[in-house]
Structure formats: C-alpha cells, structure tokens
Image 1: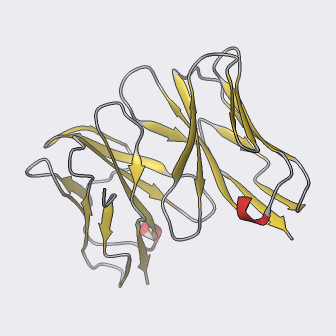
Image 2: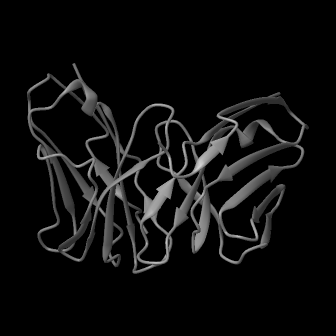
Length: 112
Length: 111
C-alpha cells in the first residue's frame, strides 16, 4: 500500500498563471476527493469522483477550477488565472466505496 | 461559516494534563470521524463513531458521540508531547461519503 500520492508537494506561482496538480489514489479505490485547506482551518470539500464520473462539485469550485479523472485512476486539478486567494493546501483523498478516506500529504500552493 | 464548530481553537497544556476538545453542530450526521493532522501532512483517521451515545477508546483517547448525533468530544488523558497536532472532526451525512470538517483544534503539549 503506497498510499495516496500528490505532486508536486509545493508550488509557487505568480498571479494570473495556470497550475495543475496531480493525485494518484490507492490503486483499488474507486472514489477520489479534492479538498482545500487554508492556514488554521479545516479542509473544505471541493469535488469528488466515483470512477471517472465527477459526481459533486462545491460552490467553492469557481469557473477557474477544473478537475478530471479521465480513466478512473489518477486525477488532476487545474486552476486557471490564479489569484492570491487560491493560496492553500490542496488535499486529495481516496476511498473504496464508503470505506474511510485516505488522504495524501497535499500540494501547498503559494500565489505571489 | 463551518457546519461543524470545534472548540477551543487552540489548547496549550503541560505533559500529563488532561484535555477535552468539542465538536458541535445543529445538523444530524450519520457518523462522525476524528482526525489528527501534523504540519505538512494530510489528516489521519483516528476513529469513526456511528451510534448516538457511543463511546470509543483508543489508548489514552476517549471519543464520544452525542445521543442526538449532532456533537462529539475527544478527551485525552495524561497528554504527551506526541499528542501535539491539529485535531479535526468531520461529519458524514446519510448520503455518500463526503466529509464536512470542523475548523480544527490545535493542541500543543509541552514537555
């Protein structure tokens, strides 16, 4: 069990640039979740997939955010035209149906 | 605003003392989970409570789910420096497996 893997671990970008993060879930897990966590706060739900289908998106996920899971395995989260308010830790988690979620160690984004 | 309110937000105690963290909501959850998160890492699941009134023990940690399944508490007995971390509660509604997190309680146990 290699756990949930997220890349990169850290990303520093200038305002207005696009960024893409990748999440590799635990191999047999069919569900994949994205959360965002700002400093001193709990994680906030962004979106989740069951296999390749995106089943729910939070209102936090503006038009500049898009997530994909094309083959039901790894997922990408893209943020276009980044803003300073996008600075946060982006956490990915996976589960097998309703089993407990396993979280990755996140990608910390800093927008300057 | 958080659907789940945790209190206190920050707790600093000496090694050997006891502490309690609270997680409250006006909503009913089918189950509630507690996580601990270290800096630079993702949350790690400690326990899941499902039944109203349920009490679970994990070594020096005691977790309780309120009778109405709206609130929970985490009690640590004889805290140790290794208990330092961010403690998060998270609720699951009846449908799906989506977690709604509280704002977290940062615990610092000084040696």
